[in-house]
Image (cartoon, rainbow, N blue to C red; front, side, top):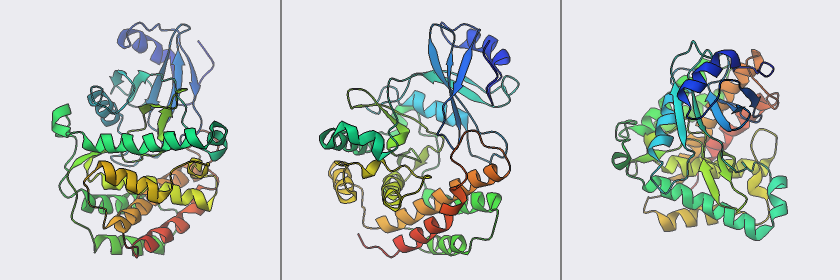
Length: 339
């Protein structure tokens, strides 16, 4: 048995693993994969094979967040589609095993490119191909009929945008460590101008380059980190991806800047590529960008709360709190955009 790993009791996990994961032994080792600021991800091995284990964060967890069962279910359902996802092996809702729900999935041969420094050595042509496939994979996800893959009851698509606005207010209120007047203003303006939804589809909830695994062949081998997945208005996914791309231009350690690598599709190219493969109306895209900013502020404020209370694992949390007010201001500015 290896040394203790925060959030994973290997002595208790071992017997469960051997019983529920095909071909697995009970003598396990584990390595925490750094970089995740929400659900915790580990490589777990038995000496001959390796798997990925995902569990919720330690400490303060908001209601409805970090639902391992939903993440496991959506990836399992997408196996037969054109959307690349890891093979899923087992889900555990018995919290006596490691103290939380968790699941086990395939370890993919792929890399989650996060920075321009990581991407740049590939050259502009390869980077362009990867970013183009990133958009095409999102388009493919949004084209999946939820009923056809058994996800018709995965969420209530009707009223999704309204629920998102109110949900993230609730999440922000539950995690706030200080007054955020810009959050109050953004909430009021979002709630007063909700657009008519586009056709219902599967929403990933946090789609970006470092939430996919790109293989040595430059193709996307898996879309991961489905913790916020639901049914709703897929334009929200596109908006959040574009928002991350805008934030990359500002700099800082909180948001990945891979989109700054030479060859990466511009924002206009991303929107044009998506529009070419989808018939969704992007005329109110500024509102969706503002919703993305509000949502991301809610996520980051929750991370900031856990950091202040010593409930985070891994580096990279100290500056999270400083990014939230500029992000909210960016959301307010996006409401004025015309597309």
